[in-house]
Length: 195
Ligand SMILES: Cc1cc2nc3c(=O)[nH]c(=O)nc-3n(C[C@H](O)[C@H](O)[C@H](O)COP(=O)(O)O)c2cc1C
Image (cartoon, rainbow, N blue to C red; front, top):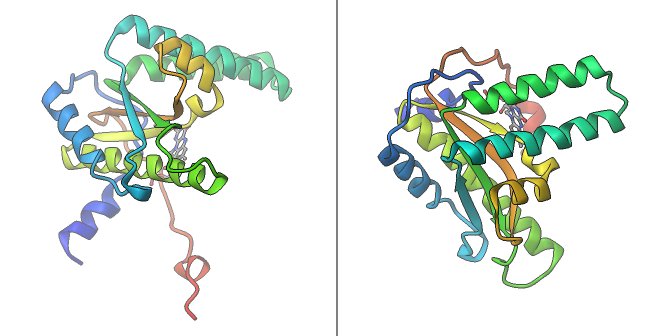
């Protein structure tokens, strides 16, 4: 197996980070590499919100966990479950050395059809993966976090985003302070059909 395959297979989600800062030049390189992702019609619909400002980070944490709390209450979670999840989420937001909110530009579609919208989202996700891989190439680790998807408007308001910048996820990046969870691949026979 060549080293490119080994590199791709060795990317893992890490959920605890050292506080060490990441140089701006490294983040710039990661985002530029991410922007090389393929996209439908080469529309490049991804938008990256690099949350550097501490006040913005605090607003983001509050917005996401307020919505999380409401959603969990509606799902019937207990108060102790809610408090635990909210506290853990706030800690993770606080600890992440770099937070990138991954958005799609809803206006970056050729025509307004459901299929084009899906391709806009698919393309944005590819840039998200490219962020994780580019971070890995820098000796960093990352974690894709879905919470903004459940709080799109709240995230837009907290970060003062254009209405067309629709949050899809956020990505934490930093130097690992933990090992990734164990992962077993499903058998390839269940994932592949050869005809
Ligand atoms: C669409 C998507 C949403 C995810 N959301 C979260 C999340 O909210 N919190 C989290 O800790 N990890 C999240 N992850 C990371 C997955 O849990 C992780 O990729 C998976 O367990 C496989 O582990 P690996 O990344 O180490 O290979 C998400 C990953 C994807 C692709």
